[in-house]
Image (cartoon, rainbow, N blue to C red):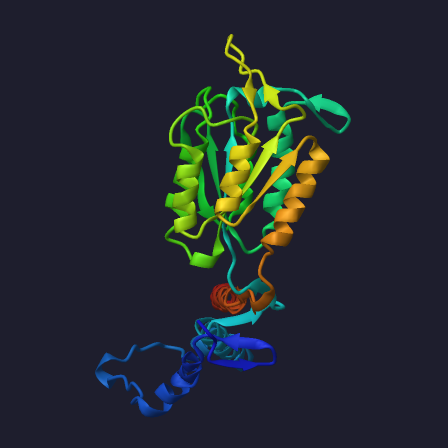
Length: 333
């Protein structure tokens, strides 16, 4: 909600509440004074005793001042003072980008170096992929993991830290030993087709060939019909990888990955090491740039706590003066 009034850099969300400030004075002027009945008057032998316990006119004046300040602070708190930080720019609209990552058994192959030591293909995908996700400011990013089956690990979201976490937590072989590239494309299209037509992007990363589910070219045609651009990435130093468990080695089907990308208006890339994968993600950033930072917002900070706390403190001081008068009167007897 936009504040209705501001003064000296402080905005007031409910400025009409300030009209309540003179109510106590109006009440004293307009309401009839209470007059006690003479029949119910309390008779005392020495009226001077009461005057001696009053604490003097100075104490009464102090209490009235505390009450006035307490009421003023309370009215200011109800008016909801606010301050705003410097404006933060945001993109007008971002892309809807799904990442489909192969987690089949062949991703265990240690034929890529990272920081001068051999690691699994999956380790490189995680390390470089997290940086790529972090750079997609303003985009909605989702994560699909696939093996024998494809499943959405993270739906499209602007919470990039969550996507990074689930990519980092992905386990090889969890989705089966086979590679269902076509199923991963079909699932991505299902998630993207309800989004804005010119912002639908899929980045698919695999180290093998389609061995289960829908054929990749059939899924790619479905993606093309729904305006989903696909960038395919083949990873691995060699052209094949061992699946383990006595299964045959799996060849990287570059021809099929190239056809999928070209059919949808995307591009195929080959990553033989970590540096090439970083370059590929940079190229995708250039092909699918994030939106310009035009509009912005100013973070709002509520400040009603300060006058509310001041009102509470003044009420405690007022109570202390009342208690002090009572104790002084008791000691004077």
